[in-house]
Amino acid sequence: LKETAQQVVDRAKKRGATAADAFIREDETFSVTVRHGEVERLKEAVSKNLRLRLFVGQRTATSQTSDLTPGVVEKLVDETLEMAHLTSEDASSGLPEGPVYAKDIPDLRLADPSWDNVKPEQRIELARRAEAAALGADPAITNSGGGSFEYERSRTIVANTLGFLGGYETTGAYLISMPIAESNGAMQQDYWLSVSRHRDRLDSPEEVGRVAAQRVMRRLGARKVKTCEVPVVFDPMTAQTLVKHVFDAVSGDAIYRKRSFLVGQIGQQVAGEKVTIVDDARMPGGLGSSPFDDEGVATQITPVIEGGVLQNYLQSAYTARKLKARPTGNGSRTGTGSISVGPTNFYMKAGTLSPEEIISSVRSGLYVVELIGFGVSTVNGNYSRGVT
Image (cartoon, rainbow, N blue to C red):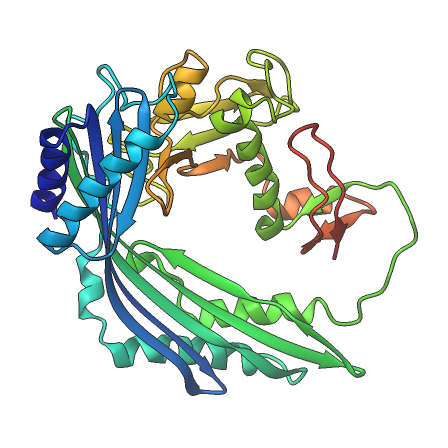
């Protein structure tokens, strides 16, 4: 894969490109869904994808292919070069510049070779056990959306005409159970899952099924409440969407387009003093961790909000040029080969209280387990959604 990537950028340079980079991703995936103990869907696949970006002066073109045979790749480079001549100039285009590239590739514990010891029959059994644990938890659980297990091993390569060539490997798996419960003719569905890069950190199927059962059972007997203004506690699965909206608002793409309510707010108090949000690509074993981004820029730990004060926006090389800033290692390759700004491990740091203490501190309020609708605008910060 590294040889192919290097050959691509070398050919682009030889054929007249000012600069170019190549991104190759190879995936091996296994997924299975069982329902009532029977295999409903089983898929095993290997895929490769090359995404090319090249520059002719300040003109840019991108392309992609899943066929990495030499003849196809050479034709792709030549055709992409022709496309570049037809595009408009953009002063902010170009490869990342300066001492921003990853020099040493740290071991972030992103791959677990022990997954190779788990045979397909054992993977199917994990999904079967997760579903069975939920179905057997309570007589009110009468049906199932299934139990699923999915595993992926990926290899990522980035090469460019400035001399960068790097690669890393990751593994990851998730296990999910989706029970359906019934009471007085009303049916409710919920789920729970465990996800990890490492086999020994994945919860047992029985634990996944047990929590899924608890979550669906608490939905039974639901009733509407009168209009009120009360404290709200967000379940972790819904709270993550709030953090996602913050990412959308601090993305360099939104900032330079002035489509964020946080434009011009660096150094300003934008949240409560207890709110600290970080983008940490160097978290060992993290689901969003990587040694470098999709442009080859070294990743980092970026404080976004500290004590409620906005500290940084997240940048790709392009948005950094637009905003006269420095790339933060958040360049993310899209399906077409272009670059956008993407999160790594983007999260809100925990406070000092346990979930139980937070809940018990509310005398009368709402515990939100599901969010409904799309009434969120990161342009002006308005937020209006339905809840369960």
